[in-house]
Length: 96
Image (cartoon, rainbow, N blue to C red; front, top):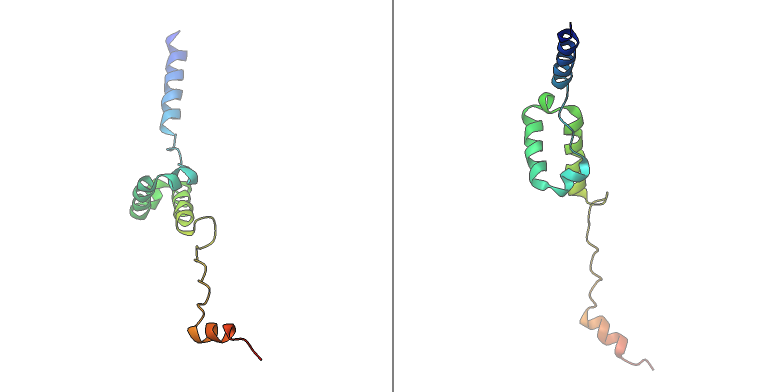
């Protein structure tokens, strides 16, 4: 009779172990690890259903953050317009 509760517990553990889905990597960890991000992007592209929506969404967000940086596109500031020699010479000439 002692083996029946043990058998039930073993079956329950076996079923619980089969039901686990792989842990989803965070956006932050993927941003910090571009090689892992590249591999997961390829896996999402090849078999989105197998990888799962949660992981592929994290991959997409990490890709966006790596591309966009802090949230907006990095557009370097335009250099100030250079003064032409003619305009510089006219500003140094004293007026009467």
